[in-house]
Image (cartoon, rainbow over the protein chains, first blue to last red):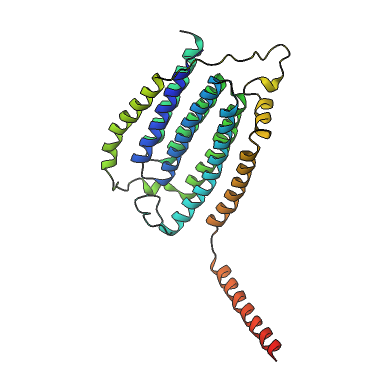
Length: 100
Length: 201
């Protein structure tokens, strides 16, 4: 059996890569994918802790996180399309006002 | 070294390399492909943690539905023209490397001091009720429809709101539609005025 700390370490590495991606990417779709990467990194931790306690709660939490990620992707991509229509750009530095 | 260790290291290395691919590519379509590889290798890791149902959901919902949506939008917006733009915030790149190391060291330090010996799992063989076995569909369904019914229902409301919201946001307002609606509003006001005049008379 692989020690659970390895899974937590992998989760930490992936989450950190996601944070760095949010810092260095300027394309709004890529930023969005980095957020998905961070959500998935947290999912590994939740599943690892679910295995640690032999309890299904962590897996249910991951299920809810997936539902939230799906809703977030739908709304976020709709916002990106609306933004692209009004600004003709996907660079987040160009979109610095609260209104479209 | 056991087989499970080699399997974990291979999948983890694949996930980390693909994650770096996600953040370092300039073209979002390559980032999307990297993210799909990360999601699939994570699904395989979920199988090693006895989360079979979640692994299947990961492939179906994430790699199947969400990533298709991403690729669809990237194709729709034809993002290639964006690549040559200069970054305004160059200093963030120099902030990124020390932040990476600091955050990683912090989390690793915490991980070292946690007691991580997994509970033994009941064997799935020999007449055990599948509801008692971690990660089976029966087990997850039992939890979801008893203790965690309210979060489940809240998720359904959330998804309904996401459907309505995304339709509202991505709708294109045609000129004819706007004119037609404005005309209808004016006509309605006129009718109301007429009605009021008739009542007064």
